[in-house]
Length: 273
Picture 1: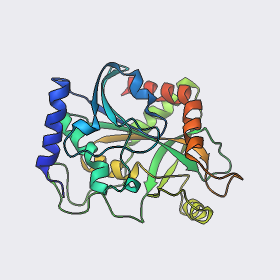
Picture 2: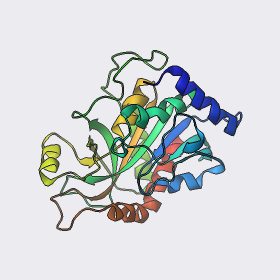
Picture 3: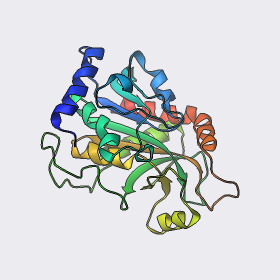
C-alpha cells in the first residue's frame, strides 16, 4: 500500500527537475497518441525511471516519460505513455501518477486512449468523447486504506467526466469541423483483446467502445477532485465485427492516420479551458 509520503517523495523528485514550474492540466496519452507531447513548447522531459515509486511503461507506442511545458497557453504535464494492469501492475501502480500530478498542482485531467468500437454504424478512425465508463469486473483503484488528503472514503461517481468540459469539446469539434462521436467506454483489463461474445455483452450493457485503460486513472482523478475530459480514438471495429484478427499494429496505424484531427481537437479544447 502506498502512503502519502510515497506520493510526496515522487512529487518532490519531479519538482527537482522542473523547478518552479507548476502545471495545471495533466494529459495521459494512449497508444500511438503520444505525439501531442512532442508539440509542447519549452519542454522539460522527466523519464518515469527517474521518479521514485514509478513503474515503467512497456506498451507499444508509449515512450514512458513526462513532458512539462506549455501547450496552447496552458501549463501542462503530459504523460507519454501510461501503466496498465495487464503489464503486471496493481491498480495502485497504474494510478500512482495521477495523485502525484495532483500534488504538483494539476486540477484538470485530459485522458486519451485507443479503443475498439462496438457500434457497426461507426467507423474505425472516428473520435469519441467519453461521457461515462463501465468498470464492473475488477477491483477499484481506491481499494484499501483511504488517504483523506486526496478525497473521501466513498466518492460519488455520477459525473466522472466533467459536463462543463464535455461542452467545451463539443464546441471545439464543431469549430474544427471534426466528427465527434459520444459514448460510453467499457473497460476490460486485457492484455488479450475481447472475444466476440465479450464485445456483444459490452454492447448490451451500454458500451460503445472497449479498451484496456483510462477507467482506473479517471476514478482516482475524480477522487482527487480533478475535472476530467476523455477521448477515445476508435482505432478498429471490436472483435466479431470485422473479418481479420485484431492487432496492435492496426491500433498504431489508426493513431497515425488520425494525428491531425486528434491534435487539432485537443489543442482547441486546451484553448478554451
